Image (tube, rainbow, N blue to C red; front, side, top):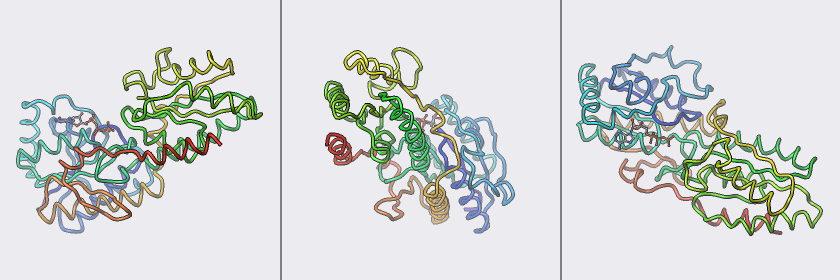
Length: 332
Ligand code: ATP
């Protein structure tokens, strides 16, 4: 294998640049030519492909986003788009591709694999919903951003005896919300995986009040009511629905904060940098060893390689005991 390409696809995640840097340097060290495909599968179709050098990947490790840009490509879901992508790969003589992204991106990688192109996936999504890995790149940084915001919101919530409903990302996955609830000491966490008990939530806020604690912090995942209304600054948005319910029932001053896309940005955390670096290097090792249709993961503090099929099929599940822990601690 002499020519390896790298692409980032789907939602961007802090730490993607660490993966790109490590994969590039590891490949160059092994004597390969490394290419960067811009804008995910869309750039593969249109031929937005450039060589990556030691210079292009220097000073990017600490930067959020992705220097390769990311996109969601409808064209790649069609046979015509896939044919064009294959033509570009053959034109440049690319032997294998490192695909950095979420489960959708891995479905694209499976298609390339079926077309005879070697692919290895690196899980990168702030949602942390990919199976066969305890952590996906970007989750830890997003969580730290959310915790920083909650600490600030807590200051003003305490001062004004208010209820704050904080909406975080997670269309189908409650990872950010649950871990933010654990690390931020929330009074309640509402996530798509567990049907919300809003009456119980109201009871807890009222109990807080009776104990002389006028403030409460409630974390909701944007996809609590099924995904599409999340993140909207509209009456039908997730945080608004929950806050309206609380306000009507308790009559307490209830405010919302939708953290939105700031959760995607920022300099990657130590974990995302170190894990991203290790994932990128292992992905290239796997391609050089002739492997394909594999994903690099992190399970029980060790690098673990799985098949792409398993990683897609087994969504990362939240631990109900952690959910219960938030519940138990907030109801004391
Ligand atoms: P995130 O979890 O951050 O949303 P993701 O990788 O799951 O990341 P998607 O938008 O689902 O994001 O997928 C990214 C891209 O992968 C799509 O825009 C498309 O180009 C490609 N892709 C997804 N599913 C398929 C599929 N079934 N066939 C071919 N390509 C696909």
